[in-house]
Image (cartoon, rainbow, N blue to C red; front, side, top):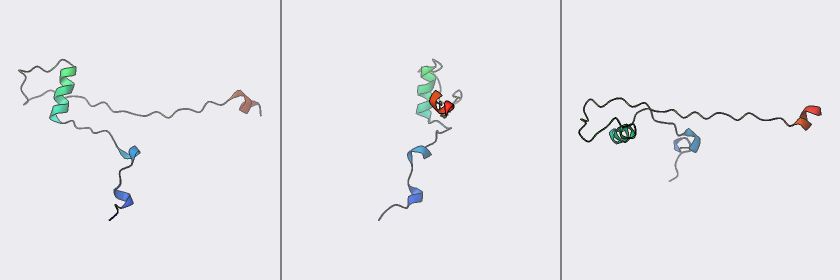
Length: 68
């Protein structure tokens, strides 16, 4: 049986998550030097999730195109 076209995930449709798992939060806090082995999981500080935005490239017109 084939999968319906609307259920397939396209590469451009994958969005960044705004919630991290506990393991991801701990690894991020370790990178920022805000987490030690003695730290308690309850009351863990918040971790900002960086949103990745792709900017569209502007087309550069050639000088030959401007003269014509």
